[in-house]
Image (cartoon, rainbow, N blue to C red):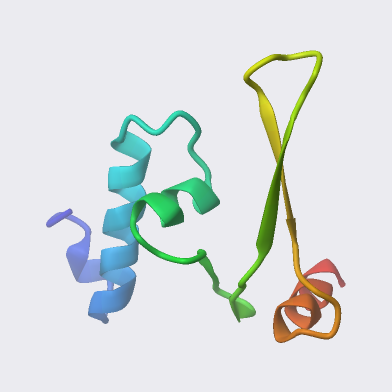
Length: 90
C-alpha cells in the first residue's frame, strides 16, 4: 500500500482502498463490494456519485444449485437511498 498511498490526498479514501485490497486477498467465499464492505466492518459501500446507500438484503437459495444464493438488495420507496438508486439508474 505504501506504493500507492501518495495518490490519495485524504486518509479516508486510502483506508477504503486498503480495505478493498485486503478484502480481495482474504478468504471470503464471494468477493464483491458488498461482502468486502461487510467484512471490513462497514454497513454498506459508499457510492462515489450518490454517497452512502443503506439497502435491505434478501438472500434466496437457488433450488437448481444447492449452496448457491442470489442476494437481492432493495431500498424502501420514498427513502433517500431509493431516490439515489433512481438517480444511478437514470
